[in-house]
Length: 497
Image: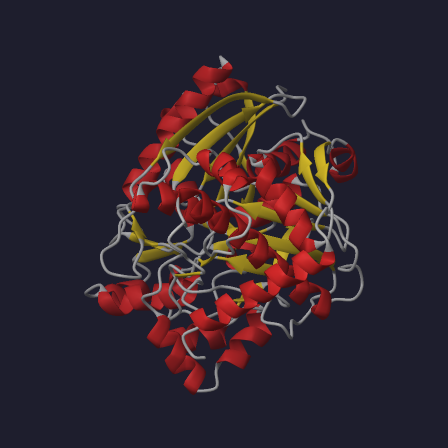
């Protein structure tokens, strides 16, 4: 059997398809951006049909780039933007409205209402999550309440709910497979992560009919077969994981105490806690890192909503840079005597603050502040927020969070300046891997190992290679002053001071 494995990486701003060869090297790729829809302030939507079209086109691009055909692919793995909600008709496959994106804040008041009923502790105990618009459950409840006839149709079994992975699998298999994996299910506010099952009590609170929920499988499992009419051959779908969990796997963070952070549109740090389902006392999330062979591995996660999106804002919103890579050179040229802080709460603040009503702010501007200082502030904001997450993790879990090395991936890690500043502010080493396509690689490994054409977990871990280690090189006085300034800026940004 061929060792080629195809990974579909369906992200927040673009879809990528990557073909890996039998040596786990990139053989071909395709990428396509799609529209970001903002119906109101704080609302973010995607057109599911545009996402589907981007998947078809990028897969064909990747196959052409690799100079192979679909019949050469041994297995397909899927990784996806998590928490984004799609509801579609079971009979036709048509979405009933645009997808509501994980960044969307329209259910903030609904979450507040549930909190006033003292229900957050119920959700947290069962799901490891907090009540925040970030997660899928309240988005789904809103859709059922606001699309005419949706709740009644869902109760009859006429509608299907899914995160993006489920929607894509449904389409790829011609409606034959209605499934998800444990990692995506664990982000819905409806899945009991201790019992590994949809939770009837939570479904009742959110008024979600169980008939519209997919079956939940291990991350490496039989998710169905791609309709041969799409790409010219039937391809088994054998691996699925949400993007941050897929990156954890791609970074080979299989041992308890290993930590990775992905810097894409947002930033997400996951600390492997093994079989230990750590209950956070510092507003982190307890989540499923992966489930293999029926065994669940848990993680502590810190979620930052805005990372690379701040750089996109500099480019598209302010127009002060031409391309994302410009920020690296500008940050290096920034005036060191100016301490400009950007708190990028464009869609609220994530962990450890969880303030859905906070909005972005800039502090420390002078008449001399310009593109260089704003670029540095945008890059530093990511580093400061990561430090907040690491501090919380070290307070929550004493069994390995201390003295850890951070493995990083995502588009922003190409910036040497940012990675050095990250190590400086964390006061910890930062390792950048040779293969930066870790999210797609994680999904590909799940599929390839399940197909028997790629190595097992231990052998895969041994293939991980470091491109560069960034060691901290900032004196303690400077670090302490910068962190104090950051905490002051965040305090001023919070909606309830």
